[in-house]
Amino acid sequence: MSSAGNGTNHNITTIDIDSSKGPESIYTVPLLKLIKEAQQQHGLRHGDYQRYRTYCSSRLHRLRKVLHFPQGDRKGFKKREVTLDNLKDEKFIYLPLIQAERAWAYAMQLKQESNTEPRKKFHLVARLRKAVSHSIHLEYICQSPLCDARTKLEAQAYSAWMQGNLFFELQEWKQASEKLVMSQTIYEKLASALNEDEQILYKQRVEELNPNLRYCAYNIGDSSAQQDLLNMRSKSGKSELDALIAQTREKQAASLLEVTWRGRTVPVRLEKIRVFLLAYQGLDASGGKANDYDAKLSVYETILLDCKEAVQALKEDLAAAAKIKVDLQPSQLGSQQYLLSYLTYLRATLTIDRNLVMVDVFKKNFAAYQSGESKKVAKPQEGVKLYEAMVQLSGELQQLQGMENDKKFRNDLELLVKIFKAFRCYYMALTCQGNRQWTEALALYQRAETYITQTEGKKLEDSDFSKYGRVGQDLAHLRSLVNSGKCAAHAQNILGVEDINAAMSGLSVRSKKSLSLRLDEFVEDVSLTSTTPNVIKLPPNMAPIPCKPLFFDLALNHIDFPSLAENMENKKSTGAGITGFVKGLWGWGGKK
Image (cartoon, rainbow, N blue to C red; front, side, top):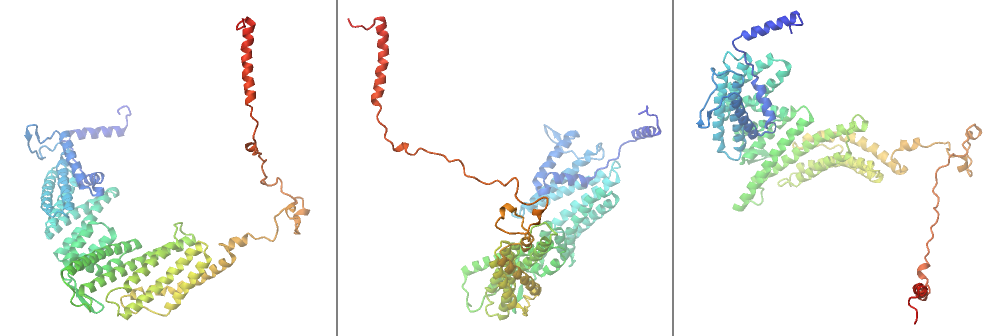
């Protein structure tokens, strides 16, 4: 460095000398970044708290070994805590942090298991207390002058967050809210002081605290907090919000004791049904704030799952009651049977509402695919399936018990079925048209036109079905589509071609055949008198010719050949004469 001989190197040397004279270095430990990276890499990405707890134990063992800070020896255990006196390395700060993380991970593991084993909640609280103890000790260690301001603030925020979790589990809402607000405030201040890359992590932590804070506010007495929780779930879709919302509804469900439908009031006894009905009451608010189709579909899927559980619970309750007592009023539908009809009606109408949202998505994609704006394939079969499901659901509503004498209800259902069938026939006709089934497509277009004529000028009068009025308003546009499709199918059926434009473009008044191929036809061909007459095509096209025949001797198997046995014996005797010739030559074998 000294050989360079410039001012910059001189300044660097001065800084090194000054730093060596300093008493001790200042520690900067980004606590939140450390724990988030460890959590994502060791199990919490998939909610595996046991794996993360095992990692924390192994990390503690490695750290104590590296820092030469064991707790006892082979003879026995001797507890050693990190103090301000032995804070000689920033890695000593990791010890209470990882201990707190290990206890917290164990508590979260027990929280998952407590759904089936309630007794584990006591152990959960004990581990959270241990985590709070370690986090408070971490905050105390970080108050050392060896730590910079950022480390001190992060330790305070982490300790406040851990204490807020403990008070939240103990249902001490006011204290939990105070600690969580303190933690959120510190993280907000830290985010504003850091660069853009580091701000993301702290802003995420701030957003994670909002659901718990609103739930605390609700339990303290803020009535608007429940709707805030519903809005948070529609935006984020996180599963941990579902537990908070379920707890909120369970508290409100105690006040919902009866429900009125079509002029009859019935009691609501089961808790699951009360919770579902509360969720159904808030459906318009949560669904109306959904910005896109995916968010709306998510809201409908959640409410349909709750409805399915409520129907199943009521059926089980009715089955159990049927074994005990006999219905004393067979002429009138029982209150719980009527409630079952109401829940079945809600499930069917909610499914129809969801399918209508899916139809809007399908129509948008289908129009974009036909116009060439989108390459995503959208087939008319999808529309057929959606409208077929809605026809079946409308049929189920017609079979509801207790609705046999309700003419207004049944008339609107019949009208709704015809509307859905009209759309179904239209998309079925498009499917047949794509398969070149012109006759079937034409028949389906005519059937769709018949349904449109039967429903034209009629309106849904019942208040339970008035929300489907916009579906009937689309019939005018559907009629124009049916008329154009019917004309196209009729023309294609007569011509027998799929694409009329392509067939017409292939026609020509001039013959392209050469003169040798049309000797018996008279066509005025100007090219015959030009320099390049179209007389014959050279070289000629390849043509198949017959192969050289193969001959098979079929008579051989039917001929009886003479016996050659005598000739074979003569040959044998000839062989013996050769031996006699040799013997006679040498005088062997002669007669005496």
